[in-house]
Length: 302
Image 1 (cartoon, rainbow, N blue to C red):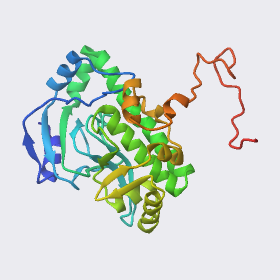
Image 2 (spheres, rainbow, N blue to C red; image 1 turned 180 degrees about the vertical axis):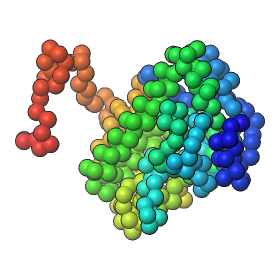
Image 3 (tube, one colour; image 1 turned 180 degrees about the horizontal axis):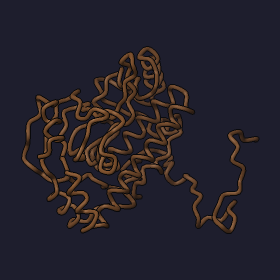
Image 4 (spheres, one colour; image 1 turned 90 degrees about the vertical axis):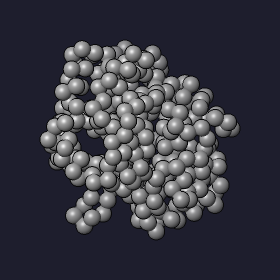
């Protein structure tokens, strides 16, 4: 174990080692790109240095720490966050089983944010030297891990859009839709009720709202018969209505069609069949080079 990893162990006084169980079944599961083969899963599992149990509300990594390993969430829910000078927190992302928390630390060697456990979690550590070996010996695996970092980037862009363009109730609606799609799509949930390990204050930090405003938003969602949030658990009553309110389109999650059908379940008026896509094979509005020549102004006339 390196000095850096030893330092992380010392800052997590309640961490206990547990038996190694591999990368688990959720890494890149349910995606239309980058799904791991059985052999690739075994190879990645063999590179795990150790696994650790981390109790809820413990910090795993501080921004600026020197790192020579990356962590995969094997179980539980983890967040990335930043605090301002007065201690007010902004949650930047949340991660479930199957998500790499800091794969970008492999080239960067440190993070510009903190990483902490929302619930009791299990994480698997991989040394950067082992990732470097994989890069040379199994480039197909590293391309798939690169895809995992691109998924993180897609989520980040959607979080920026959600905070910058949606009104308060739609922000929370979109966040609930996203979490439901991510959990159900990869097989971590089978229904429309799921636990996030979040307090109402955490939800405010996710949404860029005050706790009081968040409380009003949750009451509105409940009174409109769309969703309830109680004891960290979200229960969606009207999935179609919640998608509409949150302007939610799961395309940025890059889920397979099978996973998307699991997400939608028994919803009425399946929105998946009505989504429009403009790709390079769709030449409506595209010039021969494949670029969209339609107006890109932020205002649309009727």
